[in-house]
Image 1 (tube, one colour):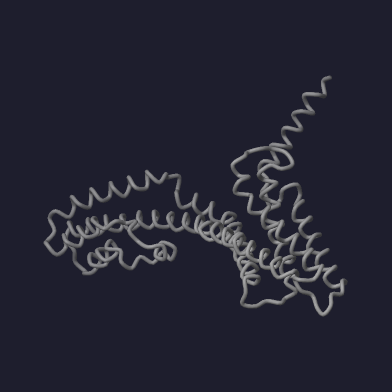
Image 2 (cartoon, helix red, strand yellow):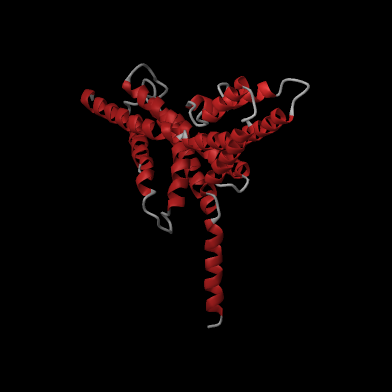
Length: 289
């Protein structure tokens, strides 16, 4: 009887350890092994089975691979619905996500061999191309979620988004006060920098990090010129450097968040387009069959 609590504790401990395992390594790469075996079987049968005059999607073997591929595409697309239900066990969200990744990669082999490498300007090739785009965007999502969260945390330096903005606002108040003794031309530079919305830049600028139109940088360049500076100008220059540093931190955070999120703006819409093209592909096949 004394061993029962220890056994339960051991099971709980193992389950707790499993919770920290990446979905890519779930159950010791179970779904990677399954997907690899499935891909190898497809490759071997493709080479061993003789189809006249050549492999194509309209042969019995092509229909078999097409049915498997279409079933996988529909099942993989259900992950978005599955995410709304949090469960444990064999079909936990982690297990489903692991299967989603590896079976999605296996789909490249299955669907490509289904075509028999007979591609052209038609709805059939469109469905295949959209599938590759969906898979490519999914690979990008896996990579960025493996690399970028640590960079996001490092850039934050234990500051929340609100604290970053409050720090910028505090610098702006000091800068506004320090700019009072300046001349009209110099004051206009500071006013332009303070009035510019630091977030009013396009997606391309946010992703590239190249803020050529930043008026804080222009003001800093103007105040950084000259061998002799009075105390007021020197103080404003220091505050501008602090403002730029704070803006850089916020913009890096925006860039990293955009890199984390942008793949979904490709992955989800293209998945919907893939389902539509796949439906057209299947309907046209049966119509002309």
